[in-house]
Length: 513
Image (cartoon, helix red, strand yellow):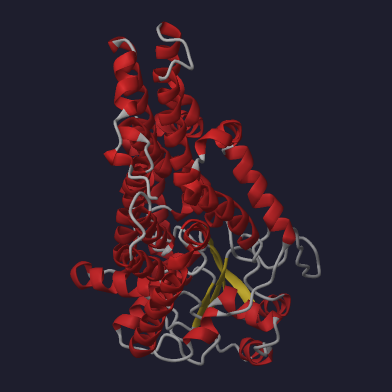
């Protein structure tokens, strides 16, 4: 039997009536503070979308591939020096927006910003459908935005498909919870889930949670669920081959080094960051995840486990745990709703103590967001200071683009957006090509011979090749949190046949000796 939370008597409203009016206002004020804190913490990412400089490595990579789609190229071709291991949908969406914007970088950031806002709205909708009431939904929405930002600030409002895929996954979850498990509903959910999967295929928690929930609560619907998911996947795969052609599945299964250190590092960062709501969740989980919320409990457990394990792949980062952060936000909203019900049922004493506890509960549950806002308040209070770093980065980036534009010929950039803005062709994807070299699927000998022949007009790197500039012999150091996007052999060849011509905040520019 399916529980329809919005058809039940509004016990949350009864709880509100049982508290003195002054304490109901305290709850409203506290929720407003949470939302204001979210705005304070995320405003810089939102207002800086129009500044054309690279915010993370993926931006240049996504812009190049979107531009190739716009130019009707085969973006899943047999050139593995520029691998495209993301599904097609994000590029299609950004290319569609670019019809109006005419700037692939800005188009991608607009899509990401809208998707980010949608994550908060959808988290609130899911919480409401699970019986969280209006106050719980408001808290979930605010925490979803704040927690999602805190898990990986560099992925907010940037040209990357993570937020779009998360929003589509949450659409599927919102369509599933609190509704009868009819074939029509499962068809809708399957389409939304597969659309999300063809946007970014690493978000596996919600599909697995729904599958397990169906197996436990409606096993007769499982064959139809599998069939609809498979059917939607086949249709999207066919469309991918039609639009982008080439070796899509081979690109999607690109090799990556696995580092167990990263699993521990990212998981511990997540636990330290959200320790207060996680502790409260542990204390309340026995009551929070009743039968009609089983799918949410499954979602949370799988999101934490899969996010931690996926973050072990080289190049993956904190964004693998953003899905878990959204789950935690919805759990916070439901914990608030259950606390209010406990007061209404007499489990806690009515009066001042209960009213104050209810009024301040959102602040405790959203403690990471409030802490974030307290650090950023000074910047937001001075708009010129808020945008000063963006203006400086834009000017520096423009100077580097102008410098590269004056160098005719092929170029290699660790900042792919620099090469794109300078008009250089997409010659090399440093990160993914290195993974192919390490797996033995690419021979770096040809690339090193091109370096030795000084075929590249310029090579831009994040930092000097040699870790000790004073040493007579170049030596490259390695340590666990160092991002490696080139092999040592390639870097030593660059040091031998190229010289440093320019340094800037973007890195170091090498030209032929």
